[in-house]
Length: 267
Image 1 (spheres, rainbow, N blue to C red):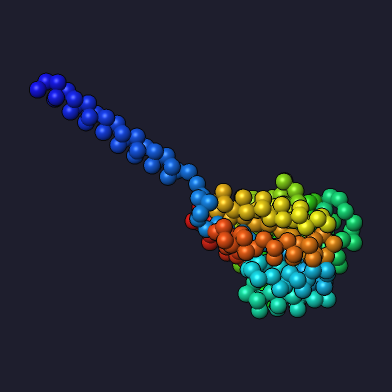
Image 2 (image 1 turned 135 degrees about the vertical axis):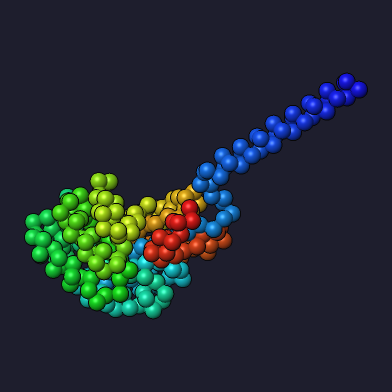
């Protein structure tokens, strides 16, 4: 009897330890953001430099997925492209030219945000670019210098806040102040994860799309930026079209950029 009693106590102790171990494992796993390869994850593709009729515009507008177009101000097709994007169920950002540390001044277009401008001049430019337009937000065209400048970012975010707009940081500098000023003014800030193009190789664009997919499957979502025109154009459109079915079969859902804000809350 004593031997049988001792054996039963051993079983009880083993079962208690096993239960505690399982419970600890569950609690530990619950504290980690682990995204199964089989769960749905989300990618927001943003296409910059729209509005000027650059190469690949028609092909981008014809993509069979949800995406966001970033439209340059005061271009020949700015209003047309914005209207077509919305008609197709996509969304539109104001693609605001901002001063860079490198590159030609001509790349910034007619009315860029420059550090040499006065507060009133900057506000006047932003008012002309944002008022009465169907934008969900804005992102920076170039801007490595301007997005590091406290005065410019303070003005920009106060104007975005006044209009209820979001900001997508293209991350042309790791020292951007968008997070700081987004918090100050209550403006939702999203940040680019991957640049898709600036290459003449479709295979490289596909590689970058796959990098975006890996980030989305790890974190639940990812944002990538491509371009029409010389930076991407036709090859970017072709690469996206080539992979979109496979991505969707792997549990990727393509969404407009503002949808990421609600998706983020679930991860």
